[in-house]
Amino acid sequence: MAEAEYGPADNDPRGAAGDPPRYAPEWLRLREPADAAARAHDLLDPLRIRLANLPTRSGGLVVHDLGCGTGSMGRWLAPLLDGAQHWVLHDRDPYLLHFAAVAAPRSAADGSRVTVETRRADLARLTPDALTGAGLVTASALLDVLTTEEVGTLAAACAGAGCPALLTLSVAGRVDLTPAHPLDAEITEAFNAHQRREGLLGPEAVTAAADAFAAHGATVRAHPSPWRLGPDESELTAQWLRGWVGAAVEQRPELRERADRYLHERLALCAAGELRVVVHHTDLLALCRPAGGAS
Image (cartoon, rainbow, N blue to C red; front, side):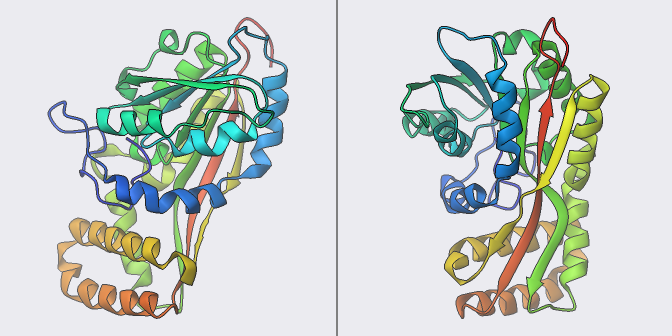
């Protein structure tokens, strides 16, 4: 259910009336290379050190990927880690779960086997029991579409299971566009307000998550993970612009006339290869105390 804060999706990331959201796979496909380029490699070494100190399990490292979407996190991370891995893919959307399972990587960095299973699951009901045996929890573009309560539930579940969490690509509330435009700041402000609707954390997600994990005794590290979009990413940039401006207008309908002109001008620059965008995100690594031991 993650990976969709700018793209075409239902307004409520947790679904309406119990129904799963429907995120356009095309949007998730477009953003996957930018996501892979943005994720903070600097967090991988401390993660590898922690994973190397975990008890060896016969089936290898068990990774729970929450809100897996089309599975881009696994396709990025599994080939960067040594050893056998079993990925448990969680999402509310059965179509995306099927896609993620089919497109999952099959081998680790050292050639060890990678296997997958899927679980249609609601993150709000996550418990430590659901993570029994987990060696790692991951998520991508998820924190900012959660509430404070849901982030607290996530932190408590990871702490209870004694496993680290790598939570990537949370929006930071900042966007840099070149060339600049007088409406940039107003659109950004309206978009950020849209991200905070109905109690969602939006740009405050990483701070809230860091506090929640630290309260359970975890060591927390954060690192920038910005998208850097130029002429080679024009298709993604155009889709991102439409979603970004559309959310701003949904939040502040009085912006519509000016925002329509703004979007037209920005899309023209994008098509001409003259627009560059930096969309700021933050990655978070929480090293929870191993179950039954000290950190």
